[in-house]
Amino acid sequence: MTMRKLNKQALIWLCAGIIILGLMGCDRLFPPSGDAVERISDGDTLTVKDPNGNKFSVRFACMDAPEVPHTNKEKQSKRASDRNQFTWGAKAQERLQQLVKQGGDRVTLNITDSDRYGRKVAEVRLKDGTFVQQVLLREGLAKVYRPYLNKCPSKDLVQQAEAEAQQQKRGIWGDAKFVNPWEYRSLSKL
Image 1 (spheres, rainbow, N blue to C red):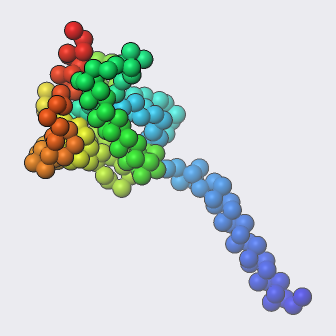
Image 2: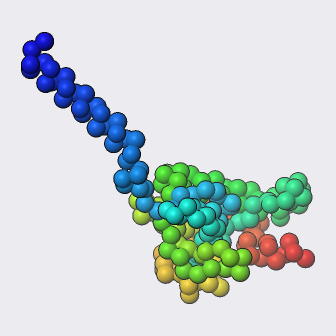
Image 3: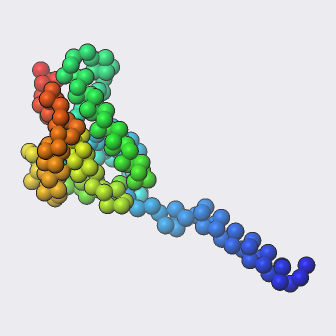
């Protein structure tokens, strides 16, 4: 073999080695940004793991998504109001799952509060900057939750997104039988 061929072969092996080592250790050298999503409970709640490995539950600020069934009794309910709420809840949850997957299963949180259940309340964004609450509201898969709107830094964006969905009769806005999630919860406790 000529010296030139040996140098070329050595260069190829060196480059291959660098690429392999880079791929193996890339996330240790440059950890992915944001918190890893561990679980999506419904259309407005997730469990995340922060870069230190701490897991915690996050409730979406500014909005309220339709409920999903949590118990077997709820899952088997034939009541029209339950079926309606749970159908919309499943759609909101599925859309949230799509968004999170699109964001590489990572989110960036702007924590604004914590609730009575110990969950962090936060505005949630994907790594490309997509504001998750704005998407769900614009698509008619949630409603602005006005009692806590004063704790919502992006209240103008969420109200605008909801108004657009309402005007276009998207999602729940086109369903005359839909009951607001907060009203549904209070009726279910009777």
